[in-house]
Image (cartoon, rainbow, N blue to C red; front, side, top):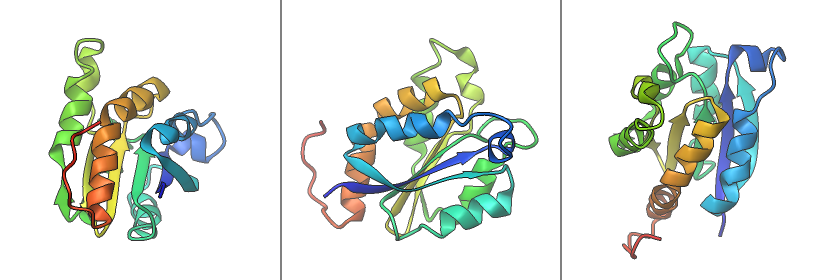
Length: 162
């Protein structure tokens, strides 16, 4: 059974139609590698309450919420603050891997506040907004995302990672 994914792009300019959303389509391109299908896609402005409400509405209604954008340190980058109150179990390894794996190519990757956690039976992952970063992050995280979602669905076996 395919994972049910919600794809969120978080950006003021993209939600206002002032710039093209390229992060969301980058996530959509990676869904086959996750054995997932998109059940919802939305572009949300960098507003804590809007982000939280949008993601919160999908908890326990999908397997994974994949968000792109708003993970930097600009004043309007509020994705981690918006999603943190929804998280019941943090998964710090996701953010650590996203930052460290790219540090050799982009030393500024350590400024990213990407991360992940679990809310109910839903995995929530927030990534940078750059499409290349999204692709690279999801390539790295695919085995862990599939595993986490399988566990959250109730399959607690631990097969060899693939």
